[in-house]
Amino acid sequence: MQEPCIKTLTTDYDAEELKGFSRSMAELQWLLLILVILYFFIPTREIVDTDPLVVTMVAYALFVLVFRYFNFQARETRFKLAVETWTMVGFITTILWHTGYTESPLLNLYLLVIIACAITLGKVMTLLEVGLIACCYLLMGFKVHSVDIFTPGTFTLLMANFSPFLLVAYVTSMLASDILAAKRKIARLSQTDDLTGVLNMRAFNTLFDKEIARVNRYGTSLTVIMVDVDGLKAINDHYGHTAGNRLIQIVSTVLKAHVRSSDVLARYGGDEFIILLSQAASGAAHAKAERIRTAIADTSLNINGKRISTTASVGIASFPNNVSDVEDVVDKADMALYKSKQSGRNRVTSYERSQDPVSACA
Image (cartoon, rainbow, N blue to C red; front, side):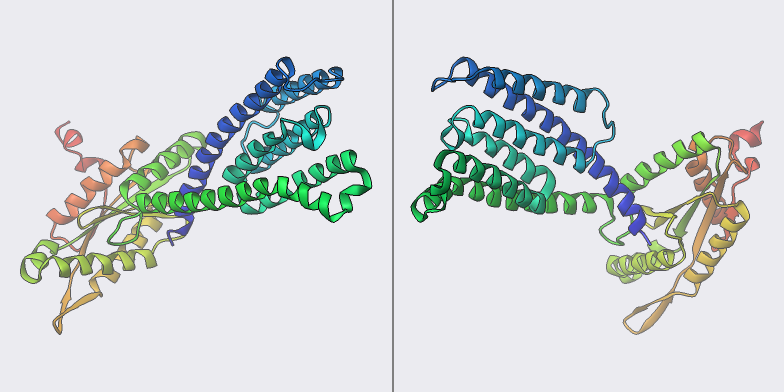
């Protein structure tokens, strides 16, 4: 049931990653242009026709400015990055066309595109990009060698010169894929609790902040349920922490079975769990909390052939029903939970303003 929450967090991670890729792509585009300009003013071989080069450089600079800085597409996407790499290929090919074709000293500029594509767009797009570059390369080879390009000697020489591009594409895409997989695994581990597999509080707070922003924007409701396992300390003392951990895992399994895909379940710490319900009426939230309490009471743990049961105390707070400030919902749910434990445990308590010590004193 936590997959939608994980996907939401992963989507946020991907968005941040794309922003980083976009910044790197912008720097790479300017670097490419600077390298061509330097060659234009300090060529290693004579440039016969300079006008096409000047027009190409100006056109490419305008493209970068318009496409990247004039909000052509404010939201960063991989398609946008792909368009930029295609344009880079076109720019480099045009420059090579006027500086020596396949013999141009600037031929290795294609490596910038291949590396950028491998890092940002993955294996498949890198393969397609290399295919496009290969077509441009063979076209320029045909311009130089005419029909002789099809002779074994010439074709073999051209492919030998092109082989470093294939090697760089393969190695870079493999490394980028492994790094990306490792980063995603680390990100996922940083979002979940090791013992139970539910979200940790770091991930919960991220989603809670997003939910608060949505509530403030659209004026919708929000409910928090806090669940505390009763008697965990006694089980730890009598049967060891391994038994206590098993009990926490069993309770987390029960909670997973009772939350919707749109709910956010997290381990609050120790033997406490927290559930965030968006757009849930207080009555429906109370009914859900009662089902959770009953399910936990009906669950038992087998320790050395002995069945050990437990119960749970539950606290509920809802905005705007009984909490005036949405950012206080967690604190008020915690107060309601404390009231449940004070009143004998194994019960559900909804927060009321009279429970607040400040309100009571007033």
